[in-house]
Length: 337
Ligand code: AHG
Ligand code: MN
Ligand code: MN
Ligand code: MN
Image 1: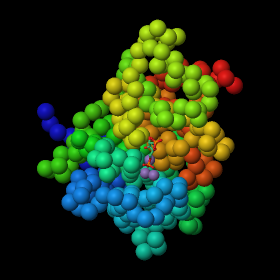
Image 2: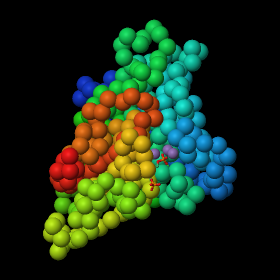
Image 3: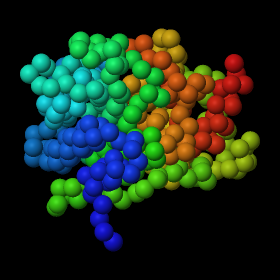
């Protein structure tokens, strides 16, 4: 079988679909190239001196791992000079990063989580990179981009994707016309198309949630999970399995592959019912991918992609995965309102 590389796939999408403008194609190529560099860096592990923490916190109040900052800088440096972007924003940078005047500016905005699942780096479990692409508002051309230009609902994303650095390094992409998966061929150094039109299987009963937070959840979330755990003899009449990797990308990859549901509900410790996960660079891109794969993504009641952001680092509750199962879960939440 003839191998389709990412470059060929993107060029063919540009030619045939008409939905992939050349500047967006080049931007995706650059992000994918940076993910390759991140993959090689992670792979070196202790030998590359890249494990462990830095003695500083990010804007989220989390202690930064060395790799959080290395991956952030790799993505920044790869994208800054290419002429495709007006500005970037990242989990690891408090403020947006407008393209410096010494480089040409493009029409897109890139938002990313350089390493998702940071707590897994030092224990050699899967981590990933998540990214979301928005268009800079037209009236922003000719002036400096501001944070407000980024605050667009997720339905306005023109592309979203993630890479996973696991047993294989894989890349999953959508431009709003299906979900495609690529595997990194390390010897050749290229991404090869390995899955087309990914859809979430509907018939596997598996939930992903951090059970240690159970006592902090709203009663309806506790009830939903209890009913799943009651198995065949409970109200759901089926046995459920559970997985929680600590890397949202890896949990979402599993759901794309074999089905199930992912929840990070708000809990009593957080003011304003905000969840832990971040809307702009976790929930929105993964929500777009999940929807494009036939699934559903909500905060428990509202569609993630319809939430109007009010801040770059805004947090949100997340319930996403197989459509039927998300509808079951949100039924519990609606009943409680
Ligand atoms: P990040 O490493 O980018 O800060 O994200 C971690 C997120 C997400 O990937 C994961 O699902 C969740 O936090 C894990 O949370 P717990 O520590 O509660 O397990
Ligand atoms: Mn973090
Ligand atoms: Mn993350
Ligand atoms: Mn991160």
